[in-house]
Image 1 (cartoon, rainbow, N blue to C red):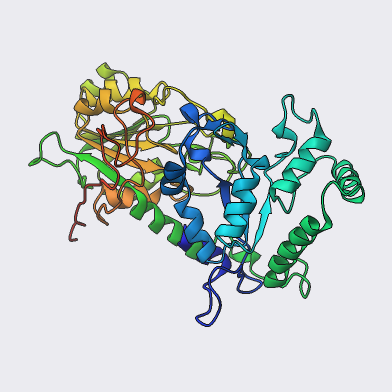
Image 2 (image 1 turned 30 degrees about the horizontal axis):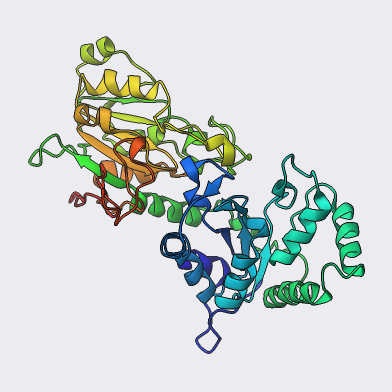
Length: 433
C-alpha cells in the first residue's frame, strides 16, 4: 500500500516530516486509504455488514495498513459503510477521532463514503438530522453527499447555530481539509492539469501494465507430478486449443467493477487492449495452429489431437454488494469447460478473479493452474509467462482456501489448513531463446 501512496502522491522529501499529508506537485494526486476499518472482515464477507472481532484482532489484522499509510503521508481516509461489533463506523467516535486522529496522529481529513451518513439508519435517510450530528461528532470532516447537498448544509448549519455541534469540531474539519488543499497546491492552481492527457494509454503505460501482469500472476500448480512440469509451454507445436469464457473477452480481464462502468462490462468494444487469446496468437510460432472454442465438449477436444490446451475462466465483473457470494465458485460454464478440456488433453487453467475461488474439486484434472487475478487490458503479460519469455515470480497476497466452510481463515489460526498458504507461488525460469 505504501508504494501505491508514493506513486499517487510522490515520495516525501528527505527533510519533510513523516505522517503529514504530502502531494508532490500538480502531476500527483491525493491518495485515500479506505475503508476504515475492518470492512474486509465482515460476517460471511457480506458488503456493508458487521465485523465481529476483539481489539487485538482489529489491531493485528485490519489496522496495520493504516499505520503505514499515515506514516507515508496519505492525505485522506474514507470511513467504511460496515459496522464494528454492531457500531456503524460512520458513527464510531472512539475509532475515528480518539484512535485515528488522536492516537495515530492522522493529520489529513476523514471523508464519508457515498451517502455514508444516510446509510446509518434503516431505512436509509430515515433520520438524517441525527445521522449528520452523529457522523460529524464521530470525526468525519468531509461528507460525500451526491444528491442533495443543500439539505446537508442546512442541517449542519442549524446544528452548529444551536450549539449541538461545537464550532471547534467544524474548525478541526476545516483545518484538515485546508491542510490537504494547500499540500496539493489547489489555491495556486485550482483546475486539473491536462498537459499530460495525451500520455494516457500510451505505449509506455501499456508496457508498464504488461510488466505488472507478468509479476502478479501466481503459479499454483505445474505438472501432475513434480518431475513433469507443463509450463512453460512450447511455442512451436502442431495444434493447440484455447477455451473458456474469459479467453477472448477484454471486459472480463479488466479490474472488475469501477472499470468502464460501476459494475464493469464484458466484451471487446469498450476499451483498447489485448485479450489473452490475441496475446497467445502473437506469441506462438506462426506454424502453430490455434483453435478457439469458448466451451467445447469432450468429444471435440479428444477428436482434434491437440498438443495442449489453455483454459481461461473466472468471475464476471462486479462491485460492492453485487459481488457478495457465499459459495465463491467459478460461474458456469467455467467448471464444465475445465472438465471437458482437462479430462481430454494436457491443460493449463488460468483463473480470472478478484479473489480466491473454489478450485480444489478440479485441481486433480489440471496439469497447471495460474491465478491471474484481474490483469486489465494487457493480456500479453499472461502469454509472456505461459510461454516462458519471462518466469513466474508472483506470490499469493492472501490465503487460498479449500472450501468456503473454512472461512474466515488467517495465517496463525490454530486450524490453518489452506489449499495454498499465504505467500505461496511456484516459480519458473525464462526460456533461453
